[in-house]
Image (cartoon, rainbow, N blue to C red):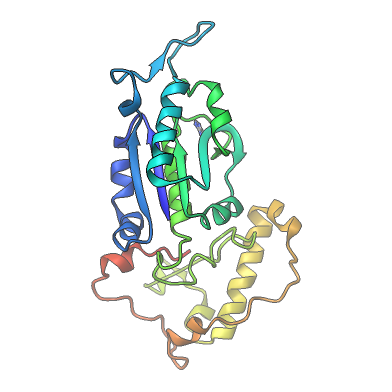
Length: 265
Ligand code: ADE
């Protein structure tokens, strides 16, 4: 997958794209992410102008952004989606992330200041919002989308199943997770997790997911068949831990960076 980002503030992306799982995915060659500075297409570096009709703030010029889109499309070939981040766009969801993760080439456009001249909407294929609040620009929404997509690319997460187990993948919240110590300030890890009984653990996790969803996000359950049986036992659930064990598997004495980075949900 290739993701190009157009922004007036490229430095916002530097640290998030070069740490943890996003960095590892790029190093492994599973995704190429390139940040492009809109100022490179400005007239003498100028990309914005005063708003017609007056008002505070500057507006990014449509001709500058379209020139950038055209250069990038010619250089890298046509994009599957050209995405513009705006609070009035379609609300980002796990379903939308799943769909976008199947594409080969995405161009993300992050507006800043007062936004981009509204005529930009004619040149994009999707308008996406990450929630009903206003941020200073589309850069953080673009990072949210990239993070959500990249972790779905096969091979990015160490545990092939961890993305499938996510909250929201099947409209249920995630089950709680625990590690050592088994008792902390009087709070015990649920006994079933120490039992070594993988069938019982799978059932408990399923029931916890249903219970938490009913308690915290009942709106998610409307489409869900709550009476459905828990998913069949996954092979990894039995292969990772010997079945006769009665204690938690030992965490590595010195967790490697990769192990540290791997999300458990
Ligand atoms: N730009 C500013 N706020 C935004 C939001 N909530 N979603 C997407 N883009 C935005």
